Length: 127
Image (cartoon, rainbow, N blue to C red):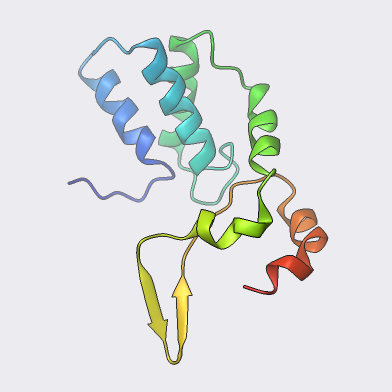
């Protein structure tokens, strides 16, 4: 088990490929790169580390099919959420009790989150 303060677990996996000079497949490079981008919100999140950025750059050098210009498109696509089933989409297996309330933790990775929240406030407030 590895526990580190880092933006993306994909960073750690990529570091193993690099450290042990293991040839990385095209698919692995693509998945790890976009995993880092997703977890660090395109390396703009406060959880992003220098290591995340270094591994994202290394992976993009390893695979010409990794497009930085595609990142915005990916986050825009993630924004197309079926709000009717939002709770089911975001639920995790763990539920917590907080007094008489049940707390469920979920995550959305989208662009323009504030705009999304304002636009969908009435739907989101029922949860």
